[in-house]
Image (cartoon, rainbow, N blue to C red; front, side, top):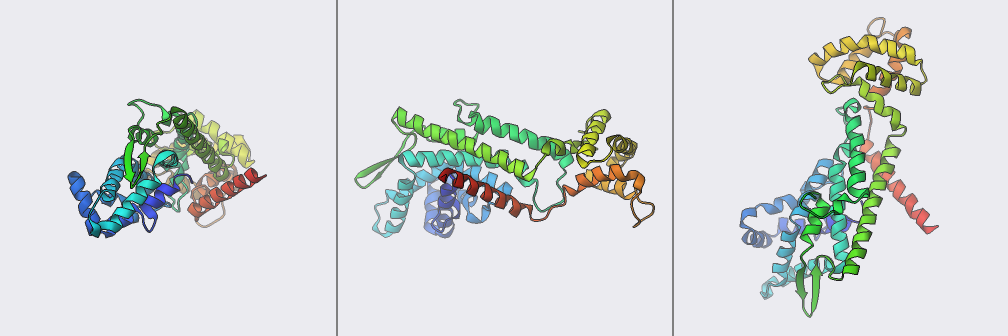
Length: 356
């Protein structure tokens, strides 16, 4: 997600960004309030303090709000750019520079790519928030949601459904394309800039092709990140067998999944399945008490000791090997930083391949 970074810096994070200026200028707040009386506090959505890339929820929320309110921001720039008052010369220059940056062919591509980034941040919220520094995540429940997330990424970004026209397209990319359908003309001295889709059909088609290619690259990056962080997930998804909630599968299916985990852990699947099956009635009872899979299987594992603080029973070795694998998946430190380092490494390798 690098193409939309210019938009983030220009609107949210940069020292001369829209959010920073509006947050610290009483006059600009007054101009905004006069233009949009129903959005007197509208700049609160754009305040820099509300955006942090490492906080997944704020990323998807704030980027989405930027897409929805984009045209209002450009209208705000236009008012500043047209202001004839000499005392407002600095704001006039600032508004004109902002309009200039986002006009014509390159500006159109950057804005659409930002819509793609906003869709990615929204779709992959569950996927990207799973490995945060917390123990609340339960892969027994999340595994299915994560696989569904990959399917949605493929459909929206790789297959290009985000670019489909029509009222049913509620993606942020679709909203951005709808905003840019009608050109927003701005005059900078003797020059004219157009914020919107290129008027030349061939040029518009070429720009759209490049944006769709970027969307496919984002989908590929998501898959690479998934494979780097969850190697051999084809069997890790079997951890759904430890789900004791109302959404659990049939016992026969759960036992079959446990057998697959046992094979991956290189223990006897028959013994592991037998030991696991003997635990199922107790796990159902404890769900009513705890409503937490992690607590249930931690308690059942602790019950496999000869006495408190003693060694685990050898007769429960197979069950414990599988269950510890499930529980240890949840105990991670600094995974947020690890993920960002993986993304950076993948991107650096991609750049090296391009040079060759």
